[in-house]
Length: 335
Ligand SMILES: NC(=O)c1ccc[n+]([C@@H]2O[C@H](COP(=O)([O-])OP(=O)(O)OC[C@H]3O[C@@H](n4cnc5c(N)ncnc54)[C@H](OP(=O)(O)O)[C@@H]3O)[C@@H](O)[C@H]2O)c1
View 1 (cartoon, rainbow, N blue to C red):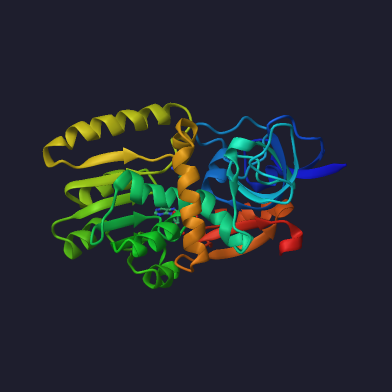
View 2: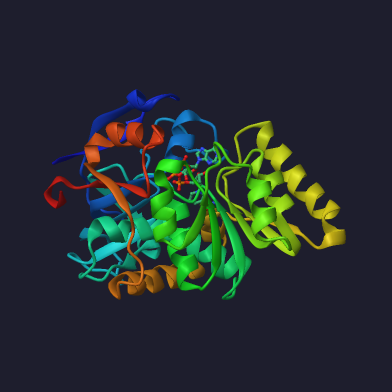
């Protein structure tokens, strides 16, 4: 039997994504074969495809940073999941596919009551947002925060979880997306037409407690400028490929030293680096988010759903900048 995947054939725009056929094989010992129900299209997929980020998989590869699906077969020694179980995993790449083989240690059970399109957004975007808020920044109610890139997949997750945590929130986004930011409890700032530093300085003369930056470039500097004494910049843009990564690391060290007198600091957040070091926090946090979704306390914004094999069109849409929230790829039966 055969199954299909979407691979990156070379660096470039979405046309480099091609559908290929693979042979379906039995899972190896310790492995489960999963029929994929859902994966997402995120900004990191785009960076990997264009070859702009460090740690991009080697071409050819199947993009898709997370997946959820049903266990279809298990290899010898797999006892934590059984055929028919609904599972999720953080995979880095491999989600744009009808099937995937994963080691049993990566699998998290997904409650059967959750909607696949909503649940899949929790694996990368909401876990990242939750960990930045509660493990990296350790926010408390009343903290004043700025979210740079607030209309995106991670940004809207930060807003929903930030609202639950009782934060006072400011967010940057294009004007056409401001209604969502307002709905989610943030004061929107249009980065195209407004001076971010000026707006924040007027609204919060003592500065902010935290800035979460998912855009990078100049925003690191701006983020530091709007922080108050003791404030913290959480930088979560992935390291660029090549010398840019070393420059970024040097910048982080230098700025942390320079900022010592006013006690501002920068912390980097990377979900994959954390996961590679220790799976426990991810394994603990994803079920917390499944519960919040089940209780209706969070509600992922799904801009559009595509069939998995139409990943190229979905990438094109995200890259167009017209998306608010998440773009999800689903098995055709779920559309
Ligand atoms: N560190 C981690 O573990 C981790 C995990 C997940 C994602 N990420 C990274 O997080 C970032 C966001 O990912 P995502 O999937 O949420 O992206 P996304 O859904 O495409 O959202 C991108 C956001 O960036 C904003 N933006 C784009 N260009 C901008 C500019 N020039 N100035 C200011 N804002 C701009 C967009 O604003 P408008 O559309 O409103 O203009 C939008 O809010 C990416 O860098 C991704 O690689 C990191």
